[in-house]
Image 1 (cartoon, rainbow over the protein chains, first blue to last red):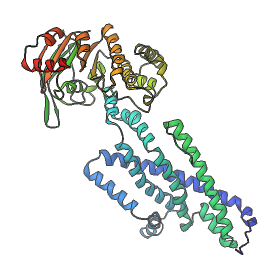
Image 2 (tube, rainbow over the protein chains, first blue to last red):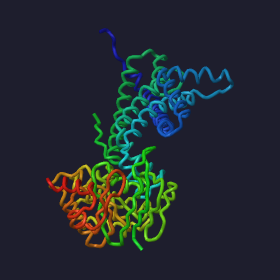
Image 3 (tube, each protein chain N blue to C red):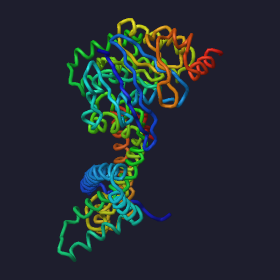
Image 4 (tube, rainbow over the protein chains, first blue to last red):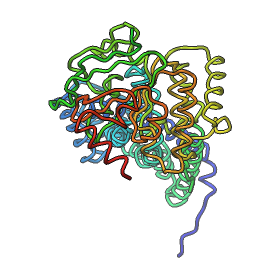
Length: 225
Length: 245
């Protein structure tokens, strides 16, 4: 191999990469959080709603999970201006990612809803719990525990695969920053080597955080590796 | 006035009527035992009293007060007067023993934390599980879980306690530890309706035995009457089969 790595130029711009990493992390957290809210509402409707509502939820989930996230975001980015709606690049990415995550999280949360033990619900009812109290004290903690590993994995997917789509619509998250910088001096390999390392650091921090959060809050025996 | 009076109660699962007019009454401090073959509707009586199986006819009176099962809100009165312990314990798996016992009194009834905590410790001592307060249900044996369920039900200070085959899911060597706890409650004068297959136990603690079959009360009376001299053929058949082994 005749390629000579020259990392000096990367370190000169390391601050910009860190800014990108921070934006990536923020985008990931917000998209996942918003998606979780959507998923919670839709999974409830899918489980307890009337058939028309269940059908509409199915339509949304099937459409989103069977088309690439990039195309969904392109629809927002290129399609909405045609009908007079202009969102910033970041907003298109964030809303697209959130809607996308919402569909996947609907599926994950629905699995959680179905796993709630009817016996515990009956116990709660006979103790005088209202529906809201059952959701709060019985359903939510149970769901959280049973689907925690799936949720944690999906967060990593959003964080790494989801946010990097931003590079294609001019959002300066980690991948976008790397593309911007490498087009200046063509040190692609060096930049993306460092960026790969930064992604690993990000997901590592997220994994440890999630594992401890799970252990403390839901008694999940979450593994970090 | 009877403490609990059930008059001609009917109940349905979907379209299938499973209780065809059940009547029974017990005085305060008495223990009534529902016995009979599987599918006779014994557990359904308890579930109907707690509002888990819809009642389609008849009256339930507790200390002269008519219980209303017409809505989720109304049924809370019945759930306030009575507490039930299930065959499968139905503990909240994600909570400690202590939290299982204190959750409803503090969060649903809104009683003072300190008092509920002290009462919970007293109840756990009563069922012999003081040292397990911080354990989770999956760290306990079936008998221990069932005793926690008993303490949890008592923490709500029910006027009447319903026990639904509380020893049926237990290994034989664990049955007695649960029955001992129930004996203590009986000695304290707790009014109870129990569904049980432990005939020796029923004979020992029950003031009244109600024999059910096919969703109806066939015969009821004192344990001596029913066990020794059942008047109906169906009761005679049932008891002869049970006592044979």
